[in-house]
Image (cartoon, rainbow, N blue to C red):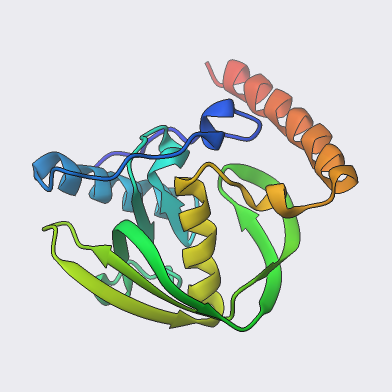
Length: 176
């Protein structure tokens, strides 16, 4: 297991679409393991492969954050079967640290996906789990939660993100 380096907004790689997974092998299992380790290290509840610069349709989640296998969800090549209702919470993102915004999403979702063995399954989710699934699946198509904001708010967030990026670079230089 390894902690992978996250991409941060406004990195253009975050706006690229991901390709379907076609090989369900040891390297995929290693990627999923690394994604969970990275997500926990950065105190997230979900992570999509594009956030670590991997253009594959892979999502990991643990909304409990307790590292228990029964709470860990892996979605490979996920597709929405249905979306119903409306809910909104203040969302954050590991790739957009320090910034949060209230986003409207479906309250209930059903998703068809594959597991790390390539077997198909369906998952239905509501509340925070449904929102997390939608947030992470957005990453697979090159979308970030801030893409849903007004132009004015997006410009404000872009300025804040640039400032945070400068602070990360300064902290990295100082730690060397």
